[in-house]
Image (tube, rainbow, N blue to C red):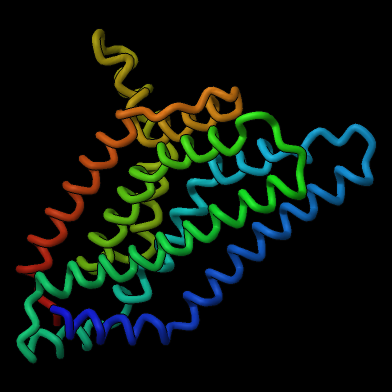
Length: 249
């Protein structure tokens, strides 16, 4: 497995798309901070040159983060059926292929997220007006987001390894992580006892996390972690089992 990981890591580091995506993400973060700083310095009564508003763009930007996760995972799960076929013919187990691709792409994605988080805090606290416990609230809200982002990454990996098309993958991600709460609210509205189920949907939790952050009331909530673990476990279990039986041709 170690040799296969080394081989895949070499392939991953040669993907220009990862560098472009990473650089673009960090440049956009930096540009946003400087724009807010400039407007705060030059516009009278400009209310958004604050670290809270700056950080809120990340807490509200779960869809963009998921898209970045999609790009990272696709680097090793895209159109490389022939490479997978070759690896299997050389005796690499499908289980090794599935988990190695996940660990590598997830590792680099989390590394970029960590760099982006540190960059945001540095820019937010030095260029913008810092409001009280803004860093603490930001970190707590980010920790609440983490299990749901990991769940999205797991779902992406499952779908890509099972050769589901990019368009269908993105539509499913959009539904689960952006509109699932609204769907469940409409679905269970007439059902007594199930009218509160929508509050536990990924999209509802993302919205709840954002509102609590804006209200300076961010706090670690076990519901994010339970839901994230359930989605991640289900996605990876189904993905690994189906990939083990899937026709690679």
